[in-house]
Image (cartoon, rainbow, N blue to C red; front, side, top):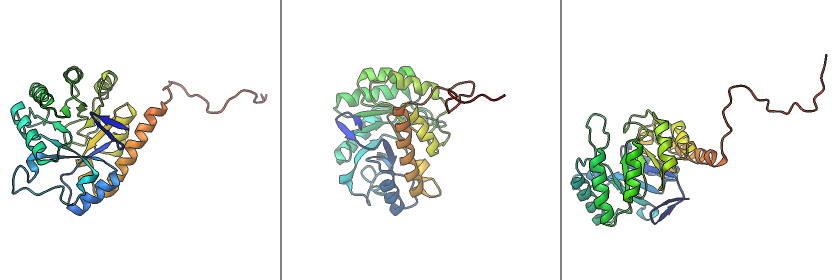
Length: 256
C-alpha cells in the first residue's frame, strides 16, 4: 500500500493523462495500468483555458485521485497560482510542484521549487515536488514537510531510463517520505529497476501514451512495477565474482 499524506493507494504506478492518440485509447490504457492516481498539466486543461480539451472527459472521476501538476511555471508564484486554480476546480487531491528552470533540458529550478513547496505546504496542500536527482535538495524538501519526493530518472519524455542510479539510491536510503521516480522512464525494464532499488512508486506518461500499443504497454508497466516491488521486498541475492553451484555437492560420489 502506497501512503502519501492522508491517502492510501493500492497501485504504485501513477499515470499521466496526456498525449494519447484519442480518448478511447486513453481510457483503456488507464484501466489496464491499474493506476489510481492520475496526473495532468493544469495549463492543458479547460479549467485554465476554455479552448483546451477536457483530458478527463471519458473517465469516471470517482474512481481516481488526481495529481495536477504546475507544468509551465517558471517561478514559485506561478506554481502556487496554478495549484490554487486546480484546487478551486475540485480536481486536486495532491499537487505535483513542477517549476522548470531550463527550457532545453526541462530540468526543475531547485530554488523556485523549494519556495513553491514552502508556500503550498503553508496553504494546506499535499505537496509532491518534481526534482532532479539532487540528494541534498531531496533531504531539504523533506525537512520542509513535503509529502513525497519525485526525482527524475532522466530528462522528461526522453525514455533514457535511470541514468544515475547511485544518486537515486542515496535519495531512497535517506527518505522519510515516499520516493516516486518521475520522468524519463522508457520501458517496463526501467520501471522494474526503479522499484527494485527501493522506489515507492513510478510516475510515467510518454512511455505509455507514445508506445505503438499504449494499452498493451500500460499493462506491461503495471506488471513491471508489481514485479519490481516484489523483487525489492524479497531481497535479491548478493552478486559474486565467481560461479556458485545451484545444487549442493555434498554427498556426491567421487570418480577416478
